[in-house]
Image (cartoon, rainbow, N blue to C red; front, top):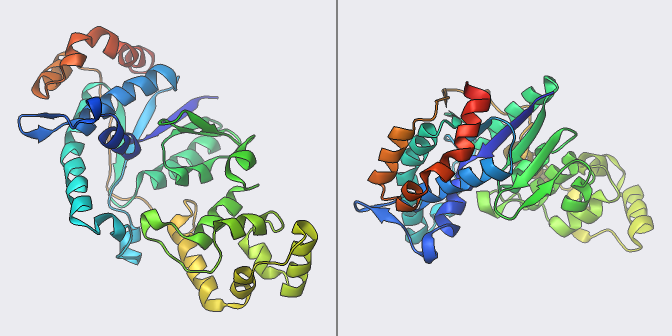
Length: 318
């Protein structure tokens, strides 16, 4: 049995952009911002040093298939000039983030029509089918739905881990299905997915303490559902849930949101235009890269910085 590690490149990159700058200031060299580049490299070094004993693959976002079905997907992330400017500053650094990791010998992958979490789901299912274990490293809670026996989710930012043994304690849900259905009922403001079902997160958690998932609730006659809810919670079923049970349009919006959020949904298309890289550590080229970006702290401590990447090279690329 082998261990497979999949790392969310944009989660690491965005955390670097917003939280890993020196003294709270943006880094730059030659008139170009380098905050996310520097932070991604140092974060990856820490991840390899402390969190993984397998060859990792960094997954990047392509342009999601979701935009074809919902043009306003993530539209709120460009709602203001400030958000657009910050997004562009980050995007301008992605090519160099990719190059820096490439020179360090880190494997990377992107599919043209997929987000990183879509590819993480595909690769996780493939790895489990082969009898392997999987570690998912990301700050994106959407990836928690992939946790099952043999799969661990780790937030690289706050040192939090979720496995199948503590899934219920960590999420408040007994199953992956209930976790996904809660998101589909309540919506995801970060992705601009707003199904307006009338059932929020707190109501969904209370509902799924009684019913396995949303479909189980909808299959149960409303009088029986209300009686079971009262028996379990000692109070009436929330009005929003009762209304949702009878509202076909709200149910249709819920199932649309499921398509957007369920990483195992049968309507997700196959990945296209897959681009991957698997390189060997190139110290000379990486030192030149650091000099070009004025990463003096890396240059001055190069032996220590490269140590986990050298170990990765020796164990998996030799």
